[in-house]
Length: 235
Image (cartoon, rainbow, N blue to C red):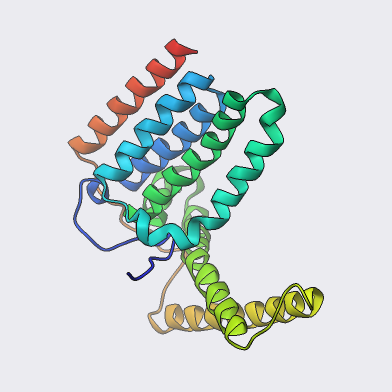
């Protein structure tokens, strides 16, 4: 089974890909804030809600597991550090973190960096004018580079494992070599990305057309309001 790189958009036609990126971004931010301040019961409610969304959106969890191992390790660490406050509280703290990660995976899986940048640029343009386009371009570049960083890091680690390098025996040497190789590869990819934009005569100051809104965005916002109301009522 082929692994899928986390935080990478998949090209497909689904309900979530047709929702405006700004609506999804608002959904993500609201859920992240809500789960952070929710009670224990509210955290479980939001977690179930986000899991149902991932199932409905057919998020390939089985193919993403390799890239998510690090987040599960952090969740275990959070559980261990909060266990003094009770098992239920520690579990809710871990679920808060995993729920935010899962919501982020849903957003990046259904939204390309280009769509996100165009939506943000169009939204901020009346206030920031040309600076809104430059700001949106930085966001697009960042979102585009995150999967490349993770992919490059995995390839370097696999190559070093194949050569029999051991982190336990030579931790400083392995870490230094890994860091140098990673930055070298990333600088090369950034340079190639910049050359590609330059060859297409890309202008960061030009205003870009944003994706349109539809009734799906209204339904999404109504669902968000219902979830917020339920969590606040439980709290």
